[in-house]
Length: 322
Ligand SMILES: N[C@@H](CCC(=O)N[C@@H](CS)C(=O)NCC(=O)O)C(=O)O
Image (cartoon, rainbow, N blue to C red):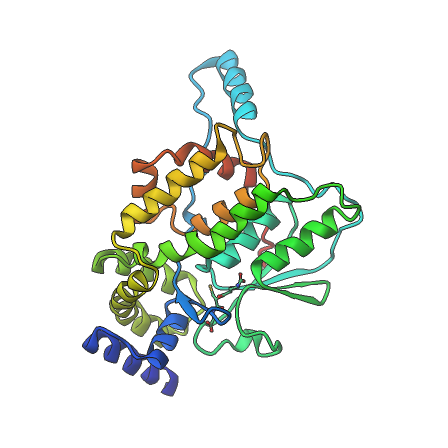
C-alpha cells in the first residue's frame, strides 16, 4: 500500500506541476511502462502492446476455389511466411522472456521469436516493484533466459539468437540492415510516447491497455490508470521537447514514410523476406498499431501494406501459455 501511495503522490505531483521532477518522472516512467536509457540518460516512452487485439490480415477470397487459389498465390507472393528455425543446432528447451507487455524493446524480441518460430514463456514484470527480476543484476526489460543463460538488451538478444540460428555465419547482416536497426533504437522509439500520450483521451486509451495487460495489483491498477494517463500526458510534452519534436503526428508520419522510402519498392528491407531491421521496425510499432496513433499512421502514410505483410510473415505468437 505504501508503494501505491508513493505512486499516487508522484503522479499527483506531476499532474499539479505539469513538470515532474527527475525522481518523480522516473517513477512515472516505470509505472507508465516508459523506458529509461541509462546510457544516454534519456527517458523515452513507449506504447502498450495490443498484440492480443491484432486482427491478422487475411486474404479476401472472392468466391469459389479458383478465387481462393488466386488469392492464396498472390498472398504467398506478397508476404513471406514465418521463418522456421532452420538450424537443428539451436533447439532450446526453455526460453523465458521477462517483459512489460507494452515495451517496444520487448516487442522487438518477441517479433524475432515469433518469426523464427521459437517457443517462449513470458513473465510479465511488475513495473513498480520489479520483483520478478530481483534475481538479476540487470534492472530493465527485456531479459531473455535461454536454458538458464541470461541475455539482456533487445538488440544484443537478437544478435545472439541470430548467431545461434546461423552458427556458421551463413547469414551476415548488411550495412543497410545495421543502419536501419540503429534508426529504430535512436529515432523511431523516441517518437512513440509523444504520440500515444498526445492528448488526454489518447493517454487514457494507452493506459487502459497498459493497466489491463500489465502486471499490476488491483490497487495499483486503479491508481495507475487515471493518474498515470494524466501524468504521462505531461511527461510526453517534456519528451517531445527533449527530442526536438514539434508536431508528434507529423514526426510519426515522416518516420513511416522514411521507412517506406528505405524499402525502395522491395517487399521488405531484406528483399523477398524480412531481415532484422524489418523485424525491429515491426516489433516497436506493433504496440501502437491499433491505438489511435497507429491507426492514424496507417491511414495517412504508405506503411500499411508493408505492415500487413509483416503481420502475415511474423504470424501467430509462439508464446507458450502456462
Ligand atoms: N537498450 C535497452 C533498453 C531497455 C529499456 O529501456 N527498457 C525499459 C522498458 S521499455 C525499462 O526496463 N526501463 C526500466 C527502468 O527504466 O527502470 C534495450 O534495447 O533492451
